[in-house]
Image (cartoon, rainbow, N blue to C red; front, side, top):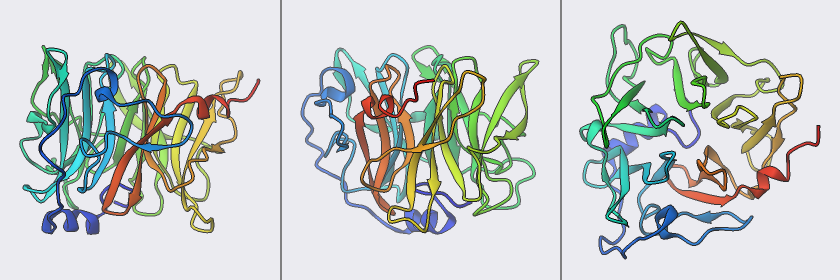
Length: 303
């Protein structure tokens, strides 16, 4: 499995044998939306420095639709491996981030909460039936009261090791990275419900998928646009976020690069549509960034 800012086998091994320095445990009281952080403009900024983005390796994030829970991945300095972290509002104040209870301190990363707040998809270092390669599969948890239930294997077509990074439209249609053909052949695919179940991966046609790998899709809740990472080794910045807007005829428009001034991956747009979050930085030592979603609107074509 090969993935930008995700975890290839080599990066997973590094995560297991490396210990990263964590920021100070003395945190200020965080009150208000987005962990009380000052909103960025159209220049990307590190999100919650010293709180979310620390000296450790952080990547991939997701808010719940109400904005009251924030999930992200950190290479945990004590566990020596990547795990999903969570911070949430309690009594009006954001809690100190901790390992999400449902991952049980096991290797886990790339959490994505569905727009209806009923399910959370993530990659889990746990084998599934029929597994022959590294045990990295898509799992999910379902909402139970104020928390989540036990992890479930959604089975084929997700697993074993067929998909990576899941994003959901409001109607339940899922967009993911099809990794079934191996490293270097990653492509964006869609999963549609048929009689209440996801049946098959459908790779998107050009212009979304082309000759170079495309991965890490984020779909707008109304499916009006799709953001994804494309690897462009011949360019100065070789991993770029692209956006494609749906045309009136229902087809996807030509993808346009989102100029962030740096390598970027793992996109997520806040539920209120105000901010684009992404991962950037050194491989194995990245941070979570955010920027005003106005940069998205400036790229929207006038159909």
